[in-house]
Amino acid sequence: MFIEAIHGAAQMGLSESTYRPRPSMAGPERCLRQLVYKGLHVEGTPFGARLAMVLEDGSAHEQVSIDVLKHTLLQIHSEQRPINLNQALPWRSECPSYTCSVCPPNNGQPRIIPATTLHGHLDYLGRDLFEQDHLGEHKGVVSHIFKRYWEGDKEPLDYFTQVVFYFRGLHEEGIPIDDGGLLIKNKDTSAYLEFELRYNYDLDQLSVPVITYAPGLEQRMVNKTYIGLYAQAIDKFRLADQHIAARTLPARLDNDDDIRCVYCPYQEPCWEGYEPPVLTGELLLPEPLIPLASELFTLEEELKPKKQRQEQLKTTLIKELTVLKANHALAPNLEVTITQSSQERVDQDRLPKGLKKAYSKTIPTLKLTVKRPKPPKAQKTGRRRPPTAQPTIPSCTHQSAA
Ligand code: SF4
Image 1 (cartoon, rainbow, N blue to C red):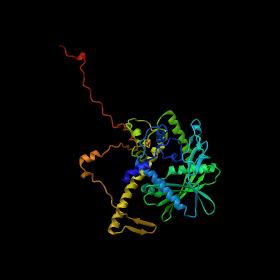
Image 2: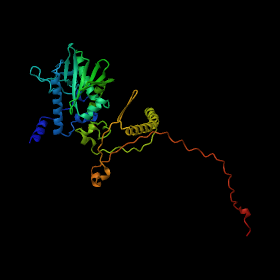
Image 3: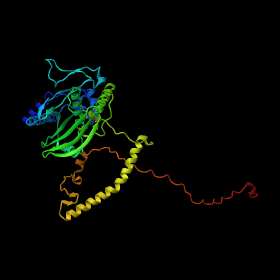
Image 4: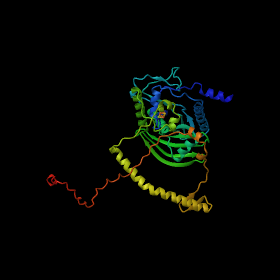
């Protein structure tokens, strides 16, 4: 009774918005082809009930964080403040202007945005006790993504790019805010990460000095700098518009198992009938690829013995510590830890053959090897055999007389 009602209601009023460049779709991870599909008005999979609830959840998580922040000494203000980057998209001068559905009307009139303006809305600004304002952006993610961000295994590049647009918008309005925080909430556990951010407008340079994890306020120094996120995003929007105008599609992502494809509304038209190209050609390696292949060759040569040794060392240490029944051992400047866990694996041999077949999928794979070419076969230099005596053909003159 409730389940149908909740999912039905979540979907109400949700529809695909028309394509226009927005800060939230500007990042380097965003699939260019997806932007083009949207710009070409290709029909994608409609919003499902689950996705509708994910979006609702996202807004609720953000609101809870902001409400709690309002109980701190920070003064939270300017929620959903509009940002305008005028003339950021000059090639769109012939496109019609549009009405922003988020901006409140101005003197009873809807807010009209010129097509050449990159328009968006920042999440909030936080004013500290020294009357300094800082930019705040909030995101909610699931546990495994959260963990990867914290461990440095993944970087939120699209979120960084989005924040860069807001820094620039504030700067162009004459509001001197050049630092802030990207707050990422774990939607499963309510833990938080904060990426500290600093932005240099003139250099288009975003710096991330540190990430903080809460609870515990543990910090990890990052000291990373990203140059040109804004410029790259504008180039990407330009390229998307060129494809839209020419009605051409840019390349797909590398494979349809990519998480971006799994959740993409255009997955069906995009991958339908796709056959991976058959690679049969033989050529001289193009000049720019030679140093890459050469580096890979050297790297693999160096790593091969090291990997073998790594495995040997691990096996020996695990064996010895197991005999000592220890999972944690200290030495000067060293800490050796064995983490015990269990993994659930499907026992392939016990699966009925029919079931295995029904749930198996052939996935094309590519394997690359780099090796030294075999030296050309050496010419045999052995001593020449003396020519064998040729049978003597009797000459006519020697023919026996009849
Ligand atoms: S299915 Fe994948 S490659 Fe195709 S448009 Fe979507 S994200 Fe891009």
